[in-house]
Length: 113
Length: 145
Image 1 (tube, rainbow over the protein chains, first blue to last red):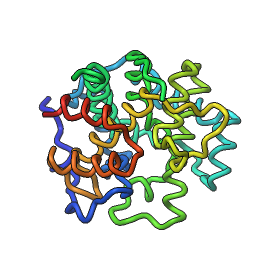
Image 2 (cartoon, each protein chain N blue to C red):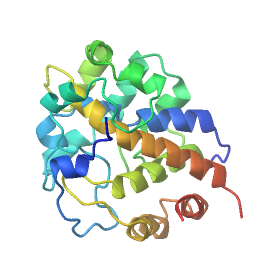
Image 3 (tube, rainbow over the protein chains, first blue to last red):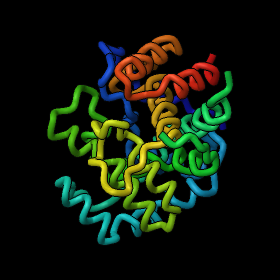
Image 4 (cartoon, chains in turn orange, yellow):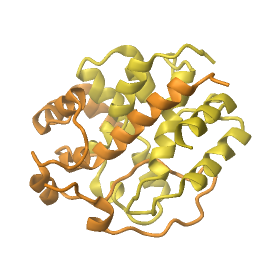
């Protein structure tokens, strides 16, 4: 199965006025739960990481989300979502891998003149 | 700032840093336009939610700290509020910069991917404002050019 291209699948909006202090962290890429079901078990072009895969297993995530400290933090922020958005875990994967690879490169280059 | 690099912890924190976003309502996570102040407050909860989820999973303390504070700044102006466990070090800054650069150069529903030059220029503004160290920025440049 060919790697999926999220940008062509879900569309993009133009970059506008990103300046210092602009929120630049990942939010989402529009993937929904229906598409998540279609992606489960498929090759999406990214390598796998046992730790990430274990912790983003839908049943594991749901169990972790139901622990008292997580529930208390959600309540503190007014989040009353009953179930975890497992689609987000799939959508996050590319960003997580990119960040991991780049962080390792930065660490290896840190302090080298 | 502590200068000792812990590569394993950086890598583990990097792969897991945004996992709390699975608890952010989808209408906020995937909103195409700018977030309202109320929505941003909820969005900003993701690093604390990542920390809580991973704490329940038994992830080590140092990785947990990096995940929790990957949007915190040396002067405490980031989020979540810096607690007694907040210790700003080079590992946290490397994770923050890698996260920023990756986010800027990837397509999102609310922006098209920046070029390498645009992303570096945006991050350099954080160097100029004193919240990202020149050394970490130089290491980023070496890594992407």
